Image (cartoon, rainbow, N blue to C red; front, side, top):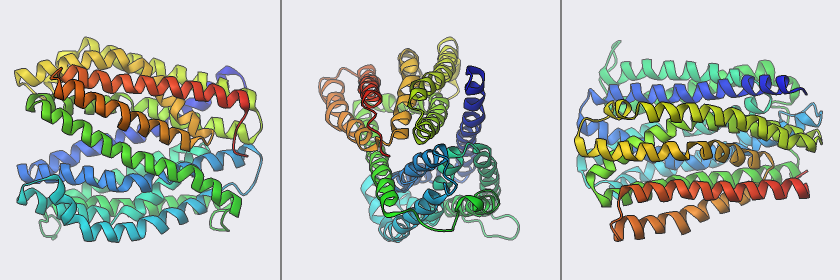
Amino acid sequence: MSNSHKHKAIMALSFPIIGGMISQNVVNIVDTAMVGQVGTSALASVGLGSFLNFFCSALVMGLAVGVQTQTARLRGAGEQQYALPLNGGLSLSTLISLPLCFLLIWQTPNLMALVTESNTIAQEGSVYLQARLIGMVALGANFAFRSYWSAVEKAHFYLFTLIVMHSSNILLNWVLIFGHWGMPAMGVEGAGYGTAISMWIGLVIHFFLAFKHALPFGFLKGLPSRKAWKELLTMSLPSGIERMFFALGMTIFMTLIGWIGEAELAASNIILNLFLVAILPAMGFGIASATFVAKAIGAKKYEELPMWKIAVSQWALGTLIFIGLCFYFFNHEIISLFTNDTMPSELASSALYLMVFFLPCEAFHMVTYQSLLGLADNRFVMFLTLGLQWLVVLPLIYVLAVSWSWGLMWAWGIHFGGRVLQLLFYSLRWRYKLNSQAFIA
């Protein structure tokens, strides 16, 4: 494949994925604005409930990773029944998420009591989280479909479904939160139901598209073989565990910063949101890289693996350098969108300059991370990511930034430095895997 065709393929697959991620951020902002009109306690309870929902759902979302790798490999090998991993992913996700959903709904009040001392926030947050959890089964299935569409290079189906989901979410929130069209005003509970219902709407759309475009390739016509099931579990479970404990680690990270000071925590909330927005394109390009890598392995075109990674990395690097330059030159203007308080503004401004310095590394980090998932090296990724986070980064932040009072910049510097260290080990692992060709067949 020529370079021009490679780059066209990267754009065709990456841009819908990135667009879908951006649309998720937009709807989060709209949700926050809607709930904010109900009251301060409602806003706080929804924020806390949203994070707990993400933590509880991280395992289910990670289960879909193996679907992408297996599907892309089968397709690259010329197999016609390459939708069988999707059947397996949907089954696995449902078997785990259904009992987990009931357990979490039952234990929601106890979970909320662990993270807040406010009875009002705990009560409202519990109602919101219980409503959100009704969509957990659909959430896991939607991620399985996203992995499949990415693997077959039809990410525009994923983008279309997300747009419908987000539009319906906004409409349902407007109806259920404020009580329009004859419905009672349900407040934060309505916000939870609106999001959960939109998840099921998305699942219906995915099934409709799959009946039309995936049925000839084995959709709902059987399950993977015993060997394929084992590979699916080997790839999916480590990714689910990694995402769950990484989310918990980020909670502890923000808790430690809260121990430094209130202004530092406010500034860090700004930086974390900006960081997540900045790396969205790199995440999208990384998911594309995982597809191209797995497809090349299935086709036994191992010589293409480094070329795909390099080509995708170029797109990720260029995009994040552009975002970094925007953050650098419009630093104060961007920070002023979030706060006008002097202390948090100054702290956030300094931390934003620090983040800009590390963004180019983040481009390679996300692409290499996803490329290793394309190699089905999920277990190594899990151990390295969680090992560095829990055994190196978090203890260093506690000792240096909190106990020794070195402050916010050291906390974020250690955080970003840990991700650079991850990139170093990811790169060494990538080179070793290529040289040894130690891929799961």
